[in-house]
Image 1 (cartoon, one colour):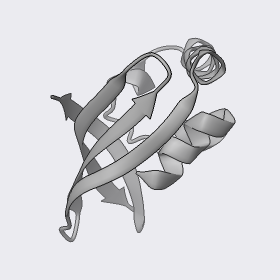
Image 2 (tube, rainbow, N blue to C red):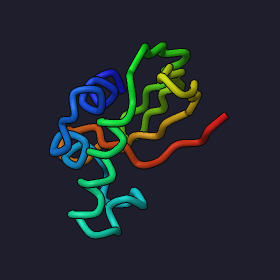
Image 3 (cartoon, rainbow, N blue to C red):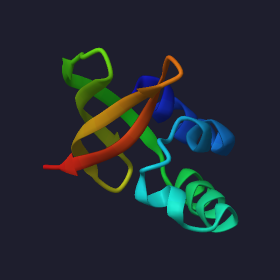
Length: 96
């Protein structure tokens, strides 16, 4: 989670794409539109902090609950990650 937050803050679009699970809804849109959406979000957002609230680890599935602080809002999410080829990939999340 920390690496993805950092990647968003640095505008590392390819890292976000590479660490997203194929079952994530964003993976179903055109790659160009997805990349542009990431870029637009990164360029229009000031990233002010990330706090990990809970981490639940499993062999193939893990959950991270976090709070992120941006210039325009706070966001709290429980993210779900699945592993493929020993790599954890972001699948989806539930917002609070």
